[in-house]
Image (cartoon, rainbow, N blue to C red; front, side, top):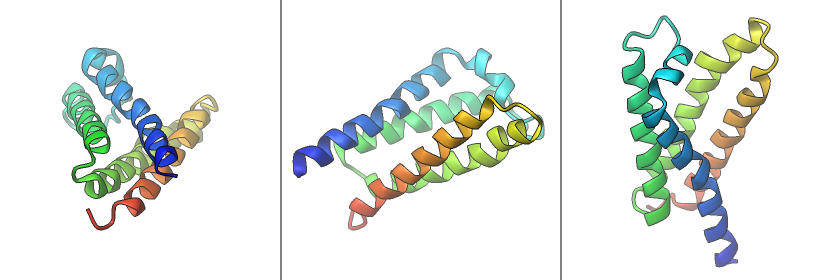
Amino acid sequence: MKNIKTIGRYLFTIPFAMLGLMHLFKASDMAGMVPSFIPGGVLWVYVIGLALIAASVSFVIQKHTYLAALLTAALMIVFVFTVYLPQVLGGNQMAMGALLKEIGLAGGALLLASNYQQD
C-alpha cells in the first residue's frame, strides 16, 4: 500500500512541477490569463510558477506537505473562480476542461493534505 501512495504522490506532483516550469519559461504567453482586475500582470505568473515548484518540491521531499497541499488546493480554487469560471460564463466552453481539471487538482491536493495532517 505504501508503494501505491508513493507512486500516486509522484504522479500528482508532475502536473504542478510542469505547470510551474511553464509559468517561468512562458510567462509572457501566460500573462494574458491574469484577470485584468488583478494588478501586476506577468509578475503573478512568475510568483505562481515559483509557488507551484515549491509545492512540488514539498510533495516529493515530504516536508511541510500538509501546508503545501492546503495552499495548492486554495490556489486551484482561486484559479477556478478568477480565470476559468469567468471564461466559461463568457461563452468559452473550451475552458470547461481546464475548470474541471483545476477542481480535480484541488480535490487531490486536499486528499494529499489529509494524509499529512500530523506534518
